[in-house]
Length: 140
Ligand SMILES: [Zn+2]
Image (cartoon, rainbow, N blue to C red; front, side):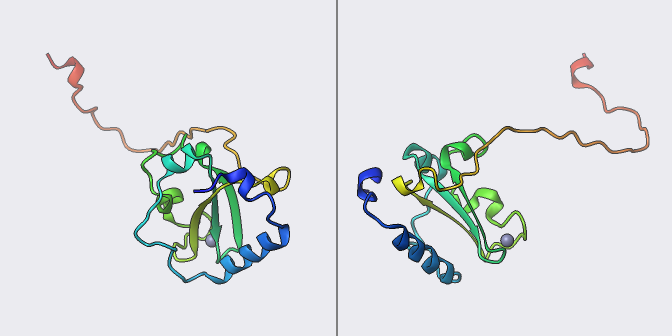
């Protein structure tokens, strides 16, 4: 891999946009290497961005791999993040998570979705009373 910052310095915005469009039209093509499945931990170690995109919803979001590392185990394959499908439409065949180095062009330009906190939701349900199961702690 080439050093991220300097190597991409001279790449123009136009060229970047072109790349994005090519990616759009590649909806049904397989990943560049089907046998190489990058894992989250490696991406986070390299300081990579993860760009999740749904070609059905036409939405794309960029994340810091290190942010996702706070939610997922580091051995998680990028394919398996977000349950492997678009959180919005639930399709997996149009959903893709790719990794890339941030470039200097991203500074002040790219919107990155940062982890702003975690909320725990308590779920309740009403059910008919039945005698509590035997508590192992008290059975002596
Ligand atoms: Zn979608």
